[in-house]
Image (cartoon, rainbow, N blue to C red):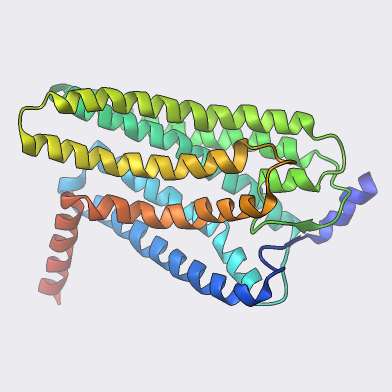
Length: 312
């Protein structure tokens, strides 16, 4: 078993869609385009949140955290995907796979917690507007953000380390676009029932529980919005919360499908495309959802572009 594990020091083969080589160039172009939009969109939100004083609020503090997380989330996996799709070499080094495993799980778990924090922020803003600035103080915002990042890191350290203890004495072919826990469990030749139980338990905590809390929070928000007498006030509150709710459903829906289904029995073809969805598509659409429905962000972008033209 030790000899088998040592053989993996030369790395793994990320299969991706190598069984359909005619589609690799199409996937390369689509993923490259999506990654470019992710870089531009999330960098724009971070830049606006830092430079525009009107966006120095808890909502945009958490939104810039989400954008920073999405940038790191995609960068931890997409460059390797593009490299493997571009040529015949599908390998990733053992160290590269381990780093990707830890970082990808860290950032994914962090996003689960951060989306709950953002739901709490919207709940306070709508349900207790007069006390919003008192409750959501800068100190509390920084504390909640730190809890999200450190909570995700703790999950990754425990779960990734536990997964890497499995006897990987099978083949080196990972039938996925990236190294993640369900794909690595499939490589194991021993009894993985404990690992699957731990995976399901931890992922239930980081997905189903936060999603339930978020949905309960939005039920309270909906009741508060219906009590607003102004139609304009209702519309503004509804638009702000709807953007976050769409992001929540996209992320949690794909994460639950990818991680909570039994690792050995789930359909691998679907699983790897779900991985592609939450690692490439969701980080790309997040800034689009928030900016297209948000007048404050669009106004801040116009002000920034206007200053740029004046300086030019």
